[in-house]
Image (cartoon, rainbow, N blue to C red):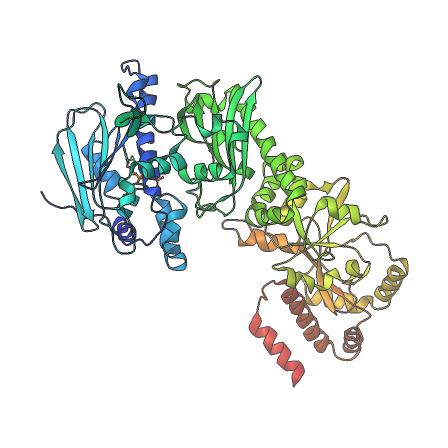
Length: 626
Ligand SMILES: Nc1ncnc2c1ncn2[C@@H]1O[C@H](COP(=O)(O)OP(=O)(O)OP(=O)(O)O)[C@@H](O)[C@H]1O
């Protein structure tokens, strides 16, 4: 029989498995049992929804057996089986395995340890076996096939005999080496312990031939051993168990078993509702961002079960977009097995569940914010952006849900603060919630525009995410306090003396400003006396709906019509530079033109905006040096 080659990627993963020095090898059993359970799920679901098939619940089980002498461990299931094509497709390639791309990228960084953090499915068998044989017969097929591989050099597929539909995975367990003991995977006690640890809640019976002792007949204290096929898992799905019986590890194991993430969950939420709509759910907030979270491959959603039978892998309707990072499952007795995707969307029960889940997640996050601040900040670092998108999207429909979960860096506290905390510290006369937008906190800190607000002693929130300004635009206000950019025209800070002085300055030097405005025609809307600058000579502020930061963000988007914020060049008339400008106006207009252009370009640089003509700018600088 001709040996077929594995696809390149599969070969690499196999190599990894075979040479793995990973210590949690035992998870291979979890992977194989999980595959077996999935296969039974598929056939069971078919049987329940297809009138032509009748099956008996007792027909579905997984059997784990071993033969110590020949070093064989076998995992059999009565699931849906695989056709020849499916064998080829599923076991010859690491199909659609986005997780592998992730592994590849991280391989060098973290070594093999990544393998243990999450499932790698079928191939993990090669961590403990030097030969893997799969014998399978698909539902509705008369033929059975055998797939076999001894390593990364290829596999064979050939017809074989198998009576019943289902799959046997046969592992030839590796010989012990000096450092490693593989015998344990041929020991009843150890195998049972692994099954209990990782696969206890599998809905189908996992059977093993278990050695038991009984009183020898006719004696009073002599015992004899006998072997009996026994179900070794409790079969109660974790979500049906009483929360009090479960430990953190149980949830973590479930998270790993389900491959919800490569990390450990930051939080789990176990919900059991017995009201008008009955359902159980286990939800997880991951600690790390899924590797594909911001790609179009990422699909949000929860697994949906109808009375214990999986009916949908990713039910998107159960999660709002802003909580799309949440993983988990929902099981409800009130959903029909035959429900189609289209019907689900209009299903009343599902809507109730979705709403309920949304509130639970929100409350959990609120609790985390209140009681586990550090953890919440870590979460917010990872997924805060998503919450801000949530505020912004759907025309702000969800802002009520989300506004209390938002956090921004505070100029005064030098750490992340909530809006509630901000307004609780506001002095009575402060009208607005002030914010400054920029690339990083360090850059914002140096923005000249912040000078007046900071001098007033008001706290400023630093907006470093693209979405921040858009989100607060949608919020409009928080508990009646409006948001105000430190760059906006009117800061709402009354400084009468200052105001009169600047009006006077403007009137006195009106012609200078007019001249400068003319030089910058088309670039700025106006040139004015600054009321906010204290030390810096110039800055840009804006007038109108779009701020300069928004202009940057929107213009960076593909296919977005060009947006221009109405920019105002502000001049600090207290600064010596103003004298120079006035002098130039009197004596040398060409010089004023030069200075105006330089100041404008400097203001652009401070804002982090590109200079239209950098060559002209450097030439201008040179001119004043000569
Ligand atoms: N016991 C089995 N019965 C039927 N099909 C199986 C069985 N084991 C594996 N398969 C098929 O092979 C595919 C690949 O299995 P594998 O465990 O490598 O990945 P997966 O289960 O799809 O994903 P992952 O384990 O990474 O979440 C499965 O999707 C399934 O279609």
